[in-house]
Length: 44
Image 1: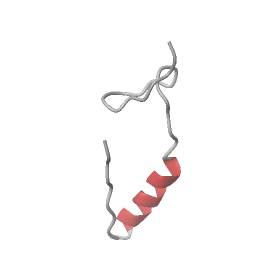
Image 2 (image 1 turned 60 degrees about the vertical axis):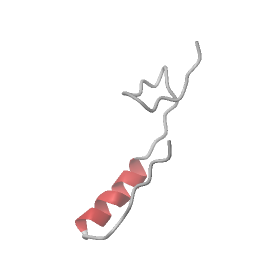
Image 3 (image 1 turned 45 degrees about the vertical axis):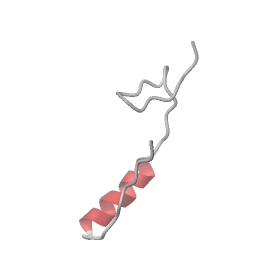
């Protein structure tokens, strides 16, 4: 069985495709710390 996309539960790297968003999270944290506005859109 190959990997698949998972949008409903915890992701397991051996079972699900993973995307590293660490740099995006750092940028968001910086914006929050500076009281800047940002928006997160989730398209499903």
